[in-house]
Image (tube, rainbow, N blue to C red):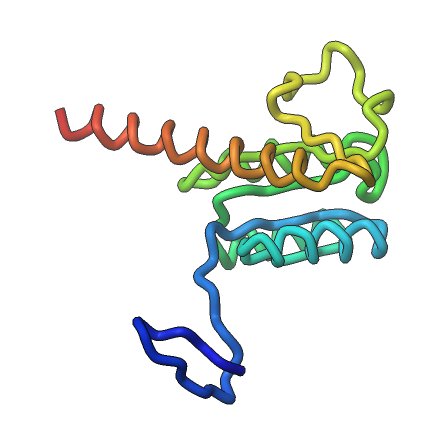
Length: 153
């Protein structure tokens, strides 16, 4: 592999390591969906831990700190995804959270997390997924900075 370093080319046997934008926990019980979303987010520079169950997600939340937690709607049964996100929001570091769905019809109009906490996954719109993920993480960072500024003042 050739790497550009200032004005000279350097040969390197090591793969290029890109810094992660943020750490994401993805809980999705459908293997194909989980691998697809994980690949998309990883390619965009996110560090992604993918799990199949809510109990695995809780284990990861207890051991690691995440900037974003994504959960599907059918992960293990009715509203398990919602309960998982409620648990994640109670962590001291308060990660951004969102339910993910490939079918917006699954979301009820009075959904507790409101539409701003929902990420719709459409097969033909990867840029929208990446935009929503970046927005959620950015919003979380802004909230965290405001809290820190309030405690300093």
